[in-house]
Image 1 (cartoon, rainbow, N blue to C red):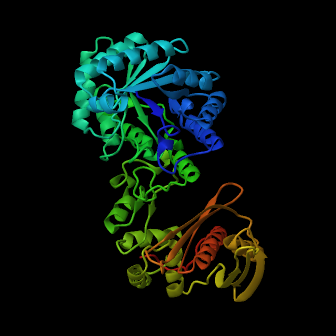
Image 2 (image 1 turned 30 degrees about the horizontal axis):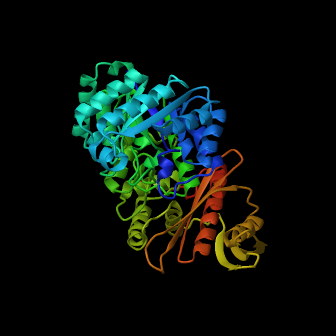
Image 3 (image 1 turned 180 degrees about the vertical axis):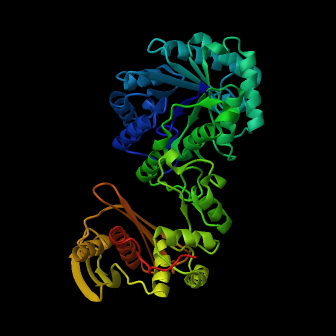
Length: 517
């Protein structure tokens, strides 16, 4: 299979996404992770645009090994010199120069004739060739350019020394069939096209960034310019994870491969989201929260029988742990049975009918149901003794100029336990008090809060992840109109899961020794 080069422009085009600006150290952190992901080229930035951009590109060039490090520049000498100076320490460097080729850009933005644009591109590439033999030329707004002029400037660019030719859909205007025709036209009309790698850079204004990129591959392009999570100008860029997993999942159809370590995809996605503060939509392909979640009863039944019924790729293939069943009003008996089995709870057929009836009542009231809720239902019906801590009372004192202080009262095996503690914030103070009562040694990994409903009276849904020294994770959920209470419940939920796991390992199950249905 032929290899497709993955050109990651998260640090350049991606950072141009509103609100996505990163510090120099954050850009270096992302670049190092992209190297672990094994992208082929990292576009580190636009060195001539600012001092911070230059410094970030220079630092990445010095410290990041493996991928080619590229810098973007206009087709002018000062920009090209800036890229070289920023990247000169890189073992493998690329100068990426561009100029617009569409009528609307040449007339209104550049105020130049096509012949002037062509000469400027030639001069720029010739100048860049004095610094490196790895030169990429982009014909900005290629998809709205006159095809014959596009072919002419591409031929001249290659003759001048360009080794990669990029035909970007700069404004996300084209559609897959049309883009296929553009790529094929250039391949058939440019006599020296075999001397360069043909690249595409698609924006997502019409939601077709990935589709257009894949269509271009079928037409003969062999480099895809994309970003992690699809961030970028306006509606963003073609999503790296979607392009890569399309090629991996539909290997027989495309007969193409990449060098990407797909098990680093999820980690890279989460890191970028954390550093930029841009949340990933739950239904985002590949990396979204719901990408490997199943709520519908029919889907849950199928997945429990064979994951391939509703999963076309493995969660582990992108670095996620596993798919999971989401319990809600659409869930069926098979999903509840699987959760009870996971908790090793024994029950009779009559017990199960009672649990399922109570579950449906709860599902009509609550948007999402967690394993803890199922355990509570089963414990009540089967008279299973509660093995963990219960929140009885929580109070916090916090405000401007005050040291956050929390008082927590818990119940454990009919005992009432109290503790007060200070923290860096009200939630931290609550957690410090809970740690003091429970003797918890787990480390807080993630803390997420979301509103289940809209409005001022929205119910808060808190999710926490606690980790052991061996990186075993316990995920807890809490649900309340009061976010402090929800935070405390989520924390206790995770602690109780560890307690129950320990007890399960010792005695085998939570329930009675009854025959399963």
